[in-house]
Image (cartoon, rainbow, N blue to C red; front, side, top):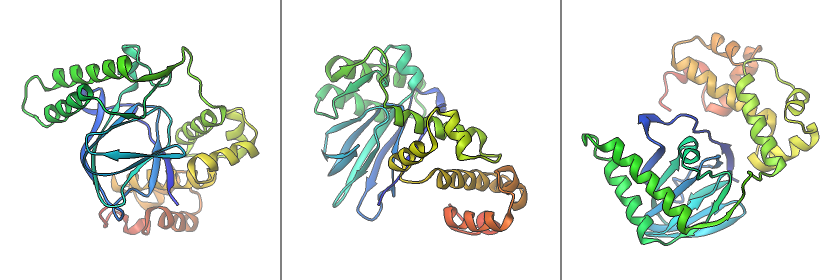
Amino acid sequence: MLGTRHEEYSSLSERLPFKIVIDRKVTPTTYSPEANWHDNLELQLCTDGEGYVMLGEKNVRFFKNDIISVNSNIIHHTNSENSITYSCVIFDMDFCRKVDIDPLKLKFAEKIKSDALLSLFRELCNIYSEKENPLRLALLNDIALRMLIELRREHTVSENKTPNERKSFSAVKETIKFIRANYERKLSLDEIAKNVFMDKYTLSREFKKITNQTIVEYINGYRCKKASELISEGLSVSEAALKCGFSNMSFFTRTFREYIGCLPSKFNKNIF
């Protein structure tokens, strides 16, 4: 069964209004074990092979030169029965909102066949690779804007003046944000539920349904992730554990091994 993770793209590198991955190859043995979801609009372009993209509860077939739009807060996962290579672009929310193309207010067609958008996508990938081009940043910003304009003009299927997010999805998002902001200290389910204005039983059920893990599992996993970062930066295992909300070293060691795959004392000697 696939796991599910929430991704945040609050700051994007290189002053670019997007994050891009070019020609990622996926096979039945190399696919990601987790689906993911985020606020940002994402476009995927199949460059070779064929497969499918899970969008929520359905699978959309994905062939060469197809473009898939992953709308805001849609749980998604790309895979193939044989092999597929695809590129993806995840647009910065602030950039979208500044030009009044807000992914939280708009829904775009899931599968797009468009020569215009295909040409822009390819141009974006080509210019992105031209590291020495003095106009690289200007050109990439221009292309990204033209892609959004093309999407808005030709491929919008619905719009809401006010974002209409399901209450349970919103509560899960706020729970994740609260945990990430407070993972260093003791957290209780009662406190978390009170913070997101939902009773703890409903929140626990919806969190498990959307993320495929319990709230406690998410807290432990996130704490271990942050602890691994601190250990990599040179902190001792005990210091990292305490800074990430673990007061019992035996429990930390056992939990770290479960989530990270090795003992914390061995982590900085391994390559991850």
